[in-house]
Length: 218
Image (cartoon, rainbow, N blue to C red):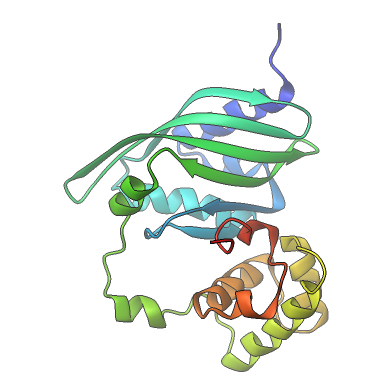
């Protein structure tokens, strides 16, 4: 029996990552695709937009000195989603990672629109990908290039948007563009990271972006 087309799609995506062909990998992603990596490591967080999702995997490769590997063990798929089991291996700073992850991907029109990572051992992975800079440096790092006044305006926009329902990345971008705050999906993603780091996002909206549902529920 032939595999579901979405299973084939994900196998092709893994093949592209394994070969280091990020351009081919980006072809399977929707323009406003996002991925959420849980935990507290250097790669943890939300990557919004096709380019940022590709940057996430490039960052894994960079931090591991090119040793990061994601081996697809199995994939189950239907018309709307795919659930993948992968073996993740890497070496970094004298440490070795060899674990399992589950990825739940939402697929529409032959494109991946979201991916949520569920590690088998979150503490292990957070330790392996731990940040190496000082806490004070992390606390004051700015993800976006928006000014304080622009971030304040964005918090107002997102507060209004999330007053009644959770919203998607494209909806956040549309509202922010209409308000004259940002221009691209990359801008909205990094700006929301700044609001999350500052503890503002959770305060201004009862319904955070869907890719924040896991990270803000604790």
